[in-house]
Image (cartoon, rainbow, N blue to C red; front, side, top):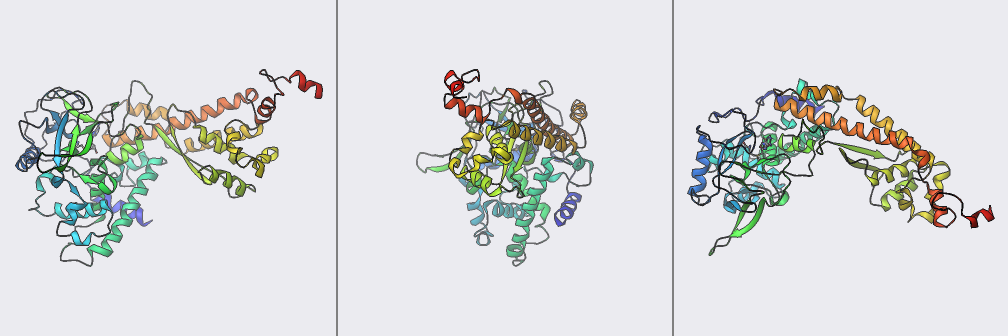
Length: 491
Ligand SMILES: C[S@@+](CC[C@H](N)C(=O)[O-])C[C@H]1O[C@@H](n2cnc3c(N)ncnc32)[C@H](O)[C@@H]1O
């Protein structure tokens, strides 16, 4: 397909490894996060950024609690003194953010009318980056040239891509790339090509936009996302700490200044940090490893516990169009806010969500259970389906799920055991590690789901079904499931 060939072309021109290409980033030591760091090397770009921000009055040696520095994951922020949870770390005024306003006020502003914020900012970033005299130079120089997200791995024929072959992560990666490609093509036709005086078309390549897209995905945080999207120098140097429980406070939009109240991005400490420690944040507790990989080029994996609540698998369930009861089932699904096709995010250790079991029972409804689809039950059927309906119905959802999990697992190139062996290797390169963690996570979730439905299959005889529940509700069955004396008279 065209997206695959352009993806392969993009791969050819991307540097192989992220973060290690900076000429002045001389500390290549592996330091665990939160270790006290005393660095004797000079980070020229970080110093230039600091000086630039100080000249603009955004930071000062006395007042600002953090400093940019080389850390384990590229650059990061170090505590300059002991900081307690909730303390202010830094405060960057709006005039130093790169957002839609910045773009509109620039030379290309009049061409950005109606563009999505990320597209306009990406256009600005790519153009500014190529201008040696850009007023944003100290900030632009600190941005990594290459990122670890699978968006940039490519080549799609390389072993890295094979590493995620068969995974959902590969599907999402291709989806993201196609999205960026379609936005770029439109921008090229509507803005770049018609204005050669302002835009040197050789600069505005797909690769260049993908880089800008990756920068925006990996360096912006709520509340400065969506329409408010903004890159904030210095604040965007904060790294993620695996397992950090506290998500807030971190980035906060507020106003500061006694006389001229101006908007600022205030960053607060998520926990206590001692002088010299790396200041970190939580990028998102609810993000799964595939999302962390795509957005930030990182994953969480704990080799000791083996369990990982970042492992996930997105399951799509569908009411088959060929089902003769399709219209009735679709009506019930829609009445309950769903459609004929529904996505369920399955997470390690959680078991199948109730809503998924309900939808599965609806999908499998047939035979003598089909009476539940009659108009009389239209408003109550969803409740009825939230518990087992009949042995046949429950058995068929178990069979379908067990078969589905088996065939999904069969599609992977390696087993969980093989992946675990690979993860024991401390020298695994970061990208391969991401691939292996994500794919083994997907498989673990699938295995768990399969086991859950196999166990369910074994207890089909012990479950209570709709018919018994109905009799109990009518007082015709006792707690042990026996007919009540009153009912026996009528039998
Ligand atoms: C907001 S930026 C932080 C600054 C970045 N370290 C730099 O050198 O510019 C986010 C990026 O930092 C890196 N990063 C942050 N936390 C990390 C972690 N815990 N593990 C691996 N990489 C991390 C990833 O490359 C991520 O995309």
